[in-house]
Image (cartoon, rainbow, N blue to C red; front, side, top):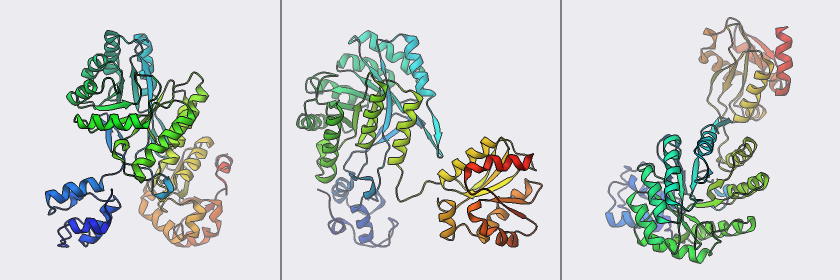
Length: 455
């Protein structure tokens, strides 16, 4: 069970030395109890206390890094059942299945789909995160051949090796040494052999509560027994699959797994969850994928990655895995929309991500190259920032003066949002020599507004 702040405090040196960055040992203990600090910050704690506190402060869902390099995916580390309680930590990963029964050309084509899946949305770059290589042929040689193609062409894309046959799993994983792959397919029949392979090649092990890869689930009792057994064999990094494939079962099992880990601190189920969402109907697959996003899956395997499906799942994931207490925001600076010249218009808005992307998108639609001054208002929209005293005449004038935009443009005209037209006179008083023009109230009026000025 997790320790309280007072219980943790009793194990600390109680010197109030501040080496941990907190004013007192009690303050540090409270942060440890809330899992907002690491015991490693205390240089004077005893090894015995460190072991006890390390276990107590560890998140209920084990943190795991899947893959290596810039495209590595962090999973687990979750501490709450509901996003509004605090926040969800590590966004789920999407993986595209690649069956070893496909031709080399088809395997290469699917890898290209993954590599070209990245899009930008509200300041974040989103993509299909991994590939799941599936031993559909049940042939070791064919699986190894497919793995060689993936190893050669998938660059640093994380790989899930899906094979219930330990021989096939080992033949493939050899090609991904130091890439931190997942070997999926450990079950009650092959647990020891799969654990040995995972240990040898330093891979995460995917455990399934079924008698054979792709079979029906054996339930959470079997799953927890398996994870305990595999942990006793020296494997710490595990992802789990209850065997659920229907929507109702996925919701039930994933919820029970997360509840056991969070509320009961039940370690045998305190691991990231992998969900196989493949369906013949692409819309149904998208819906199953959405259930996985909303209900605690850390990895969701898809059979196809059409752009419409990607955008829908990316958007849902992004909405659920942003911190509800921190508005999404972009960097304060002068943005170039198109290829503006020194006499191009200069507009201003706040740094709320949605505001920025709507406004910049409408400027692009106008086909009039422009400068867009984005001012840091702590991620608030225009009206909210104005009401909160963060988008005022004095602050706008100071931002424009300090931005250096005067060295870039020839004119001295600033276009402000129509919703804050009331500020135009005050801004003009504080920006000596500048003309303040009131733009449209709504962003969709920007194209006509800019085109009419250019006519």
